[in-house]
Image 1: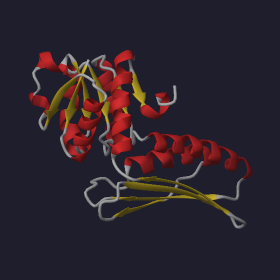
Image 2 (image 1 turned 45 degrees about the horizontal axis):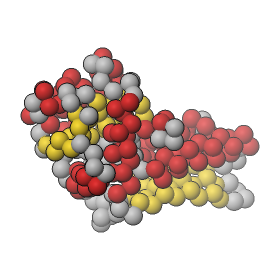
Image 3 (image 1 turned 90 degrees about the vertical axis):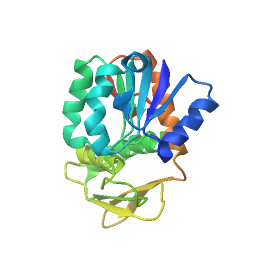
Length: 222
């Protein structure tokens, strides 16, 4: 399949560079994905990095028309089941993620293991702190929410998340586990958007050999 990018902001341009550098089939980009001819869409994987409102308006078109989809847009957790159900109904393979960075997904795995251990002994409280650039529309970030869900599942209580929007920071996420005796800190800091873009392109290649709906963290290390 060819790859077509929905949205051509900073992430879209970075994804384009990686597609071209890898010599993958590239169908271009669109600011209005619903204007894509059905014949072209059927031959393409759509990589969507737009904004929450755009994705909410466009996801049905993507599911109905594209051969497959990679969804990097966040801020639609409240309609998660509706979106997943619609892609399944259309039999359109999809990979989605709150964060396509390899490092962040390794952090998810480490946090799962760490909080699983901590939960057996108790006496620790968890907190999450996240910082992003001022252009990011959702707060807390999708990554912080995903990290929080992992921690909550193991520790059994909601994890407080503090969000900051500063300058052009690509993304910093910190999980702190603290007791009266000590503190454990797990941090991931992105230096640029390249890691997110690399993961999205990797997912676009993977989805061409898969059927069904996947969270990227379920398949990234397989």
